[in-house]
Image (tube, rainbow over the protein chains, first blue to last red):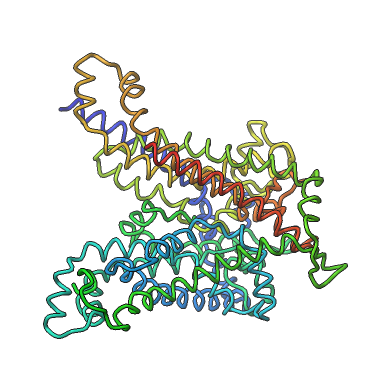
Length: 274
Length: 298
C-alpha cells in the first residue's frame, strides 16, 4: 500500500513538472502582460514588479475597443444562429426517417472536415462579387461553418438519448410534434445547447484566416486582426501585445473550463477544428 | 410515433415536409459555405484570371495546372508541406504518448492535469503565435535567451534563421496539436482491461514487456487514426506559419496554405490560387480514403 502511495506521489510530482513545462509558454504570455516593459526586456526570468499599464494602454485605444465590440457582435450572432439552426436540424436527424436523411447528415458532417484554406479563394471571390467585403455580415455568415457541424452532431447524440416516449405522451395530450420538441426535449438537452452555443462563440472569437482575407478596414476588424495592429514594428510594446493576447485568450479559457465535459465529448465525437 | 409507423395511409404534406423544413437551414449553410465554394473553386481553376492583366476571368483550360507543374517555388512548398505535416504529427505523438501514460492514473493531480493539458489546443493560434514570437524574440524572449546560452541560437532570433525556422515552427505546431492526441490516447488507455496487466505481471513480465505487448498494440489504432486526422489538419495549416514568419525567412516556412494565400493577395492570381486549392483537396481526398480504410480495419 505505502509502496503504491509513494509511487503515485512520485508520478504526481513528475506530472506537475511535465504540466508546467508544457504550459510554460502560455504562463509566460500571461506574466509578460503584467510586467513593466523595462523588466520584460532586461529584468530576468522571475517577475518582481507587476503593472496593469498594458491593459490600460490597449483599452485606451479606440481601434482595440472597436475590434472588441466587433468580435463580440460576430461571436454572439454566430453563437445564436448556430443554436437556432442546429437544434431543429439535429432534431430532424434524430427523430424522423425520410428520404435523403443520411446524405444530408453526411453533408453537414463533411463541412466540418473541409479546411478553411481549401475554400478560401472561392469564398473571397464570391463575397467580393456580392459586395460584402469588409462587412461583419460576411464574416458572421462564414463563421457559421466553424461550429455548426459539431453542434448538429453533438445535439443529435443528446436528442437520441431522450426517450421518444416522453414526447409521445405529450403528443397524446394534444401537443403537436414541434410543441413536444419545445416543451419536452429542448429543456432536457439545455446544457448541451448552451455548450454548443459557447463552442461556436469561442471558435468565431479566435478565428484568424477568414477575418484576414475578408476584412481590411479598421472599423470592421476583429480582435485577432487588431492584435496584429498592436504589433506595430516601429513603436510597439511586448507587454501590450501580450495583454492583447490575454484579452483574446481569457474568454476562450474560461468558457472552455466551464464547459469542459461537453466540449471534450464534442471534440472526440469527430469535431476537429482547432 | 406516427412518422415511424409503416405507411398505411398517405400522410399529409405538412407531416412529410416537416423534417425537411427543420434541416433546411443547416443544409443551406453547408451548401453556401462548402459545396458551392468547392464547385466554384474547381470552375475558377480552369479560368485565366490575373488581376493586373485581365480583371475579368476568361476561360483558360489547363493553363493554371500547367503553370503549377512548372512552378519550382510551389514544388518546394509542396515537399515542405509534407515535411511540415509529418513533422507535426511526429512531435504530437512524441509529446502525447509519455504524457498520456503519465495522466492515465486516478489521482486528483492526474485528473486536474488532464484538463489543463488541453489549453494549447484550446487557445487561438493568434495568441500562441504572438506568444511564441515574444518567447523567441532576440531582445525580450526568455526562450531565445535559453537557446542563446546553449549555443543553438545566435544574436538574432532563431525564427530569422532559414535553416532553423521551419523546425521551430513544426515543434510549436506539434505542441499545439498534442492535447488532442493525449485526449484520444487517454481514452484508449482507459479501455484496456486491467486483468491483462495483472495476468502479465503474474507471468513475470517487466514494465517494458507489458508496455510493448499490451499497451502499444491496444493504442496503435487510435494513434494511427488520430494521427491521420491531425495530419490532415496540419497539411492545411496557415495561421501559425503566417503569424510567426509570413512564410519566411526566404520562403523557409512557406507551406501550400501560404503559397495559396500569397497567390491571391500578393500575386493577384485568384484562378492560380484556386488550382492550388483543388490540388490540395485531391490530396485530402486520398488521405480521407486511407483514413476510412484504416477505420474499417479497426
